[in-house]
Image 1: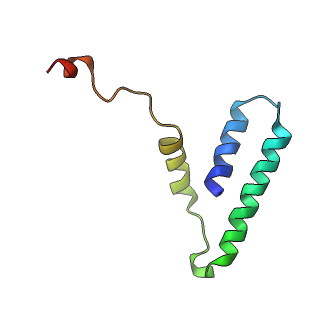
Image 2: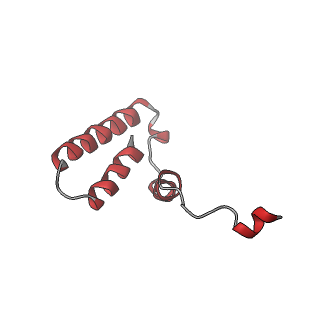
Amino acid sequence: MYMYSARLKTEAALKDNQGSSLMLQERLNALSAAVNALHLVHPAYAWIDSLTDQNSLTSECYPSKKAKRTPDEYCK
C-alpha cells in the first residue's frame, strides 16, 4: 500500500489538477492501510525501506521501453 501511495504521488505530479481531490483521498487511504498493517507486526519488523521502494518504483511500475534485442540480432 505504501508503494501504491508513492506511485499515486508520482502520477499526480505528472497530471494536472483534475481529480486531485480523489487522488489525494486515495493516497490517504493507502497510507492509512500501510500504517495499520505496520501496527499488526512486531515493532522490530514494522518498517518500510524507502530506498528500495524508490528504485523498484522506477524499474517495476514503469518498465523500460527499450528493445531487448537489436534488428541485427534477429537475423542471426
